[in-house]
Image 1 (cartoon, rainbow, N blue to C red):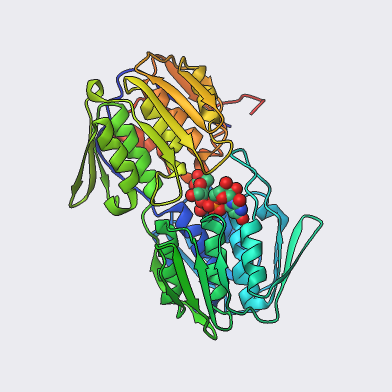
Image 2 (image 1 turned 180 degrees about the vertical axis):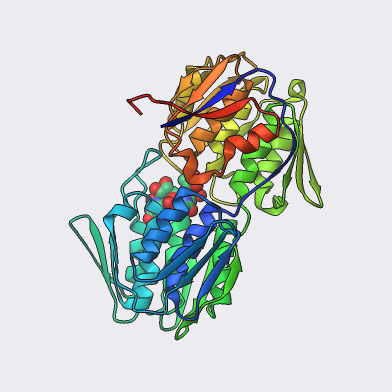
Length: 427
Ligand code: EPZ
C-alpha cells in the first residue's frame, strides 16, 4: 500500500497549480448519459479519479458502451442500445454516488433496480428524498434484499417540495423528470454549481430544464434525449483545497481556471481571516502572511453557504490562525474525524455536537495519522505541511477518489512531500 510522507516546517507554497474537472459534476453527468437513446455523448475535461472509473463501470453494467481516453480526459458513451435495469451491488457499494443512476434508468426503461447505498464514515446518508420524489412522479418503489426496486410505466410530472436541498436527490429527480409526461417543479432544490452543470448538459441533450442554480427547478418532459458534447465544469473543491493550502503556508499561489463565482462562500471567509484573494485573468491568486491570520467562525450550509466539502480543509487552516475559531458542520452528522487525528498532532480542539472549537497558532507535531474520508485525507496532508517533523498519511484510497496527483501538485508548489510504497500489513 502507499503512504504520503510530509516533512513539516517551512513549506511556503509558491507558483501556479492547475485543477481538474469536478468529481461531483462528472459523476451525475455520466449517469445522465443513460438518457440519450440517440447518438453518442462525449464528456471532456473528465478528471482521472477512481470514482470516475467506478461510475464508468456502473454505466457499462447497464449495457452502454463507455470509452475513457485518459490521455485526452475524454469519456465517450453510447447508450443507444437496450439499457438494462440493474445497477449491481459491487459497484454501488463502492460508491454511494451511483444512486443517481436510479432516476435515469427509471425514466429510460420504466424499471430500475439499484443496490441501496450504504452509509459512509461521514454520516448515514439516507436516500428518502430521492425515493419520495420519484414516488410523487408515479414510481412504485419497494426495497428487497438490499436493493431498491422502482417501477413506472411512465413517469408523470409532479410538484415536489424537498425537505432538504439534497444534491443527489435534486440530480436524480431532475434527470427523471426530463422524460416524464408533463411538468415537474422541484422546490427547495440544491443550488450547487454541479447542479447547474448537469442542467446545461441535459438541455444540450434536448431536455427542457429551467431554474437550475435557484431553489426552484422546472422540468418539462420530452419524448427522448440525444447525445451531445459537454465540457465538465472545474472542480471548485480541488481549487478551494489549494487556496487553503496557499493561505496556511503563507504562500503565493495562482489556482489556474478556478471560478470565483463558484467559490464565493470560501473566498469571503478567507478574506475575513486576512488572506489576500484576487481574481486574475488566469484564475484566482491567494497570498497570505501567517502573522496576519485571524480566527474566524464558519458554519457549513448547502450552496451558496460555506461548502461542507471544504470543512475539513478549512479546519486545517484554522490551526494556524491565532485565537479560537469555530466550525459548525450542519450538513453531515459525523464529519469531524480529521480533528481527532489532528489532536494527535497537538491540536487543542473541542467538539460538542455539531460545533468544533479550534485553538490556532499552537505548534503542531507531525505524526502517523489515519484518513477516514476523502476531504479528511486532504486536510491531514495540509496540516502536515505546517506541523514540525514528519507526518505520514495512509489509506490513500480515500484521497484518490477525489484528488488527481495531489502530492505532485503540492511538491511542484514547493512542498516537501512524497508518496511512497509502504509494506504495512495492517493497511
Ligand atoms: C453530494 O453528496 C456530494 N457528492 C458530497 O461530496 C457533498 O458533501 C454533498 O453533496 C453535499 O454538498 C457527490 O456529489 C458525488 P446530499 P450527496 O444528498 O448528494 C441528507 C465529497 O467529499 N439527505 O446533499 O449524497 C444527507 O444525509 C462528497 O466530494 C437525506 O437526509 O449529498 C446529508 O446529511 C462527500 N435524505 C445531507 O442531506 C436524502 O434523501 C446532504 O446530502 C438525501 C440526503
